[in-house]
Image (tube, rainbow, N blue to C red; front, side, top):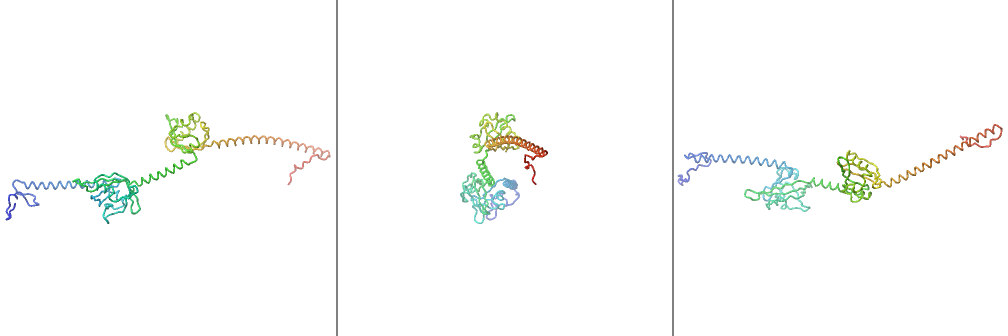
Length: 372
């Protein structure tokens, strides 16, 4: 140590001024310390470069993942920034903008409200804020973000706290998937299914959705997968869903093999067919339109036309009876007209004979003269 009068003390031995790269001590102690400082600086630079590379890689990962990710940079979540999906597709803000709902006035880049099951949440109730405040993970749940420009995003979102080297909370990370389009598609599907089911149940035609059963590529049966109310009303068959037609109508394969073959042909070719068929097993006439919506399946839309067929049969019988009667009348008419024509010819011949003999003609045949 240097004395107050400027003389070095023993404790100052081996020390060098700050910034010295070497020292003239015989044992080389100071020189070794200088090399250690240089090694520490090189190691620090290497670690810093690696950290920068890892940070760049992490940012690339955050920007490429197809979900929104937000990072709260402080325990109070006063500053929260997002990845590319979060900024561009969800929040519609510039990259790096502060989107925290807990931000101080004037620091928010976007205005929005968050709802859970229709109830608005305060900033302290949001996932990142809860994770940072409690130091515990927040399970993902469905949240609705309503923006000032009337946009709505439905997010399935959760959060995790972030800790520093001492184990204290230093912020949080939140991640969420925007399921708005999925929910809209589900709603459209439900609406479509509702309309379909309404049409399905209220149509006056019977409808059966069935799966064909093959054995070694030969049609042997079919299973009713769904039927509408009109099916039951028209056929009188109840509780058929899930059953084979051979269970529902025993003996139909023997009495009506063409029906099974027709359905199988439609399934194999994919070409719809329309036909009228008398089903012996049910003693009914059916008008059927059948098509195949997917492999090994068919839909049969039908109407029972037994009354119409019976009426047509009665009408046909009447037509045949009238035709027979008409033929008889025609034959009688031909016979009567022929006899009348022969009588007129005989009268004409008698009149001619009388005229030749100077006698007056006995028959008046003026009706044969054509009046002009």
